[in-house]
Length: 170
Image (cartoon, rainbow, N blue to C red; front, side, top):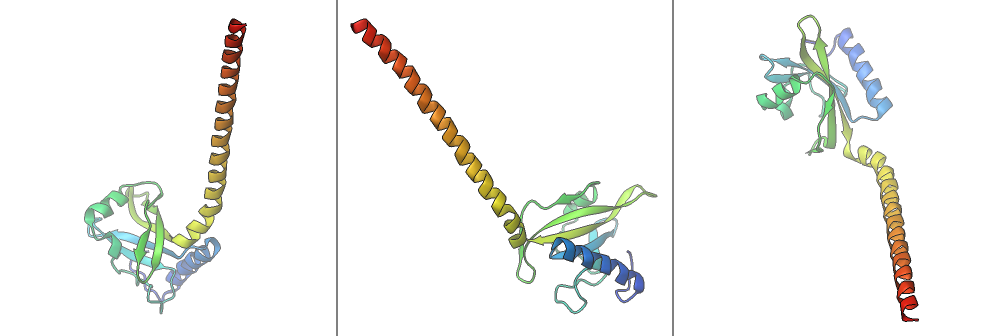
């Protein structure tokens, strides 16, 4: 995906696949970038945004969120898919979280780029909210069961203790 002309047929085919993926999985963005400058800089290869979108990144545009060479090398040394642990907020793009899968060059045994996808925070929250509610209800239910068992065990303990005291007093 290096040196793609965003008007070429090969670029359009890959872009079409990215658009299909974006629509099928409801991602906000799907993109690829590759390593240049000895692996210190990430530049865009293909972007799923339409060419006239203010969010479109032309091929060869430096990825602005990874300008730190240490961060780029850290990501480039990973040989498995990874994701950001925190949401990122941008005035133009909104709040989202990103995931990346490495593009592996088997001939040279190294990572040469990544395919990435950004999911909107609102979409992730809409998936997680029902799960959070279920776990909260489950946690409350389990805690209630422990409370009932605790109270019941106290009742049994003191019933026997008071019964033994009553027998001694008779």
